[in-house]
Length: 110
Image 1 (cartoon, rainbow, N blue to C red):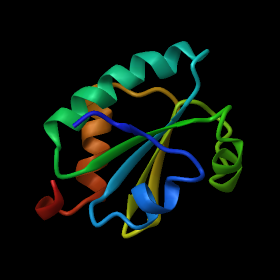
Image 2 (image 1 turned 90 degrees about the horizontal axis):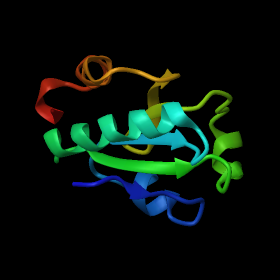
Image 3 (image 1 turned 45 degrees about the vertical axis):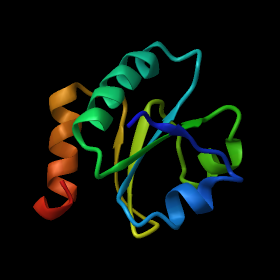
Image 4 (image 1 turned 90 degrees about the vertical axis):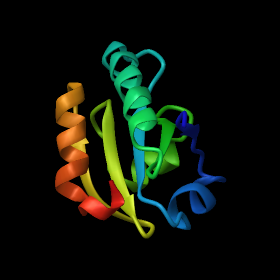
């Protein structure tokens, strides 16, 4: 499933109240590393349909960017039961993103 766009208005429903783990990608349209990583996130979303994936435009959704102290793009955060449990800062390769999920989530959620 393709990542959904998350805004301050949709955050509660799509992330905080989600019954599934949520991998949230903070990015910006001008960020070349974000564009490259977004393609990797898309592939990860296809491989893990049991996890919800979302994207936050860090410029347009500055309140969310501030709330989660995002200072480097791209940053991905993992939420479980509405709470942030871990984050990766800076661009990553596909194997690093997969390892991040495996380390943070029990096998039953993968």
